[in-house]
Length: 329
Length: 230
Image (cartoon, rainbow over all chains, first blue to last red; front, side):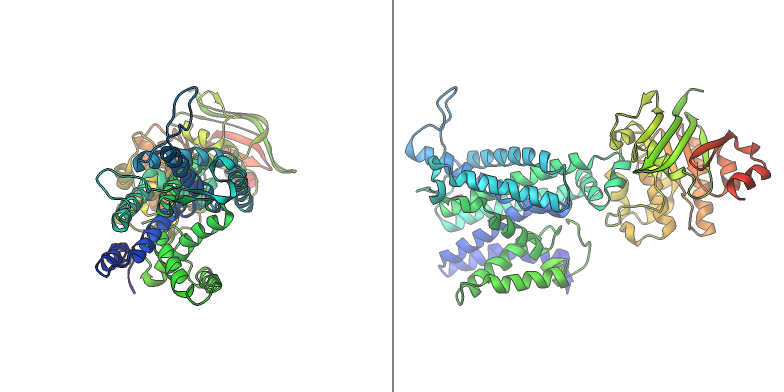
């Protein structure tokens, strides 16, 4: 057993070390896998703010992941076809600039989360799970029936978007971008968890009535957390679409929502580095077991079952000495 | 003295089960009022109504001249009603310091002042609340309520189930509070002797009604026996 902080540091540094090894061994595919881990961990970090800090079991986070993906796809497709996105009442053109795409993705994700949260958060427990799932299915079927942007076939983007000073087509440089954004999101989540807002959110998760008696509004706290969570998950979606240079309704499916939740649960709900551990384990299992069987998700299901039954602190809780179970940090 | 909190003939029910049949009481700014009664007579229900955790079905609740009826519970707390609930309700996974700052609002009470009132909290500042003793958890619950800088602090059975030495510490802190601030106190407790040292007036509830109110020193043994079973 090692300390949770040491384990966090090892986990965090392992990813760039894997990339450095892959660069030396000339294995670009491994770099792509590491990038995928970073992006999934970013999506999980978003969900972890709602789930880990706020106790909100959202089965609709694929909405924000997909919105981020489509924000990238729509802006990039208009840029590559030199057609404006909107001509009237004012001109909006597409863009291949990653910072602009990220900003758009996060704004759209936050807005969607704000609207969906404003309605969903009036419910709780199983009703909240069901209403977020229902919103997810609405977005999924909307994307399927939206022929302008590929409908069911999805929307391919032929060139990766650009970032000033970087060759984003180079796998290592694209990884560096994704990893830097993950690091920023983790830093933000850590600061948030220990700021009065995060503490109040955590307090409302532990006891709604006690929080209310202290003058806190659980609804507003949760809505703010859900909005932040949506923005971060949308950023991950934009990166994921850029990694694949493709966006499709699958990004909005309930299975994607389930996968993002699996990253968080596998690593440890509420643990800052839990989504990173969960995403890494998920990709490792997919790659190692996937070579032998297309049913690799059966052993994944067993692992998930074992974590839920025997290791409530997730992978990090299992490997590390307990410092502060159930808390970000 | 103008009333900070005024309950006029308040009735309330849990679903169909009526719990309050007409409670009236008044607390002035800076005053300490003891709310007395045997178990099940409506003390905690009255507190829930004041904190808006339960809506009254009749009567009126006014705080600082404002009708509380339309306010959601967290807004009532923000107006300046602080509650130390029964049963040492702290946020278990947060540290002592985090419990204090989670709901803090600007005002004369800050972490340093709370720690000066309860030095034990300063010693345990970075310890998780769940690992504190019962007495320390109660000090933390009081400290957390003080950090919201209330104009009225309500203590519901704050010393129940605590060791005598810890109870003495809590009562000493409440006496200090009364002496050094303009905050009004509404205290529910079984210890009439201790209440007599900090409260100026008392209201006795029986079967959901306020049946007696007056200076706490005027509670005669016969009255205490009849209404409080003492």
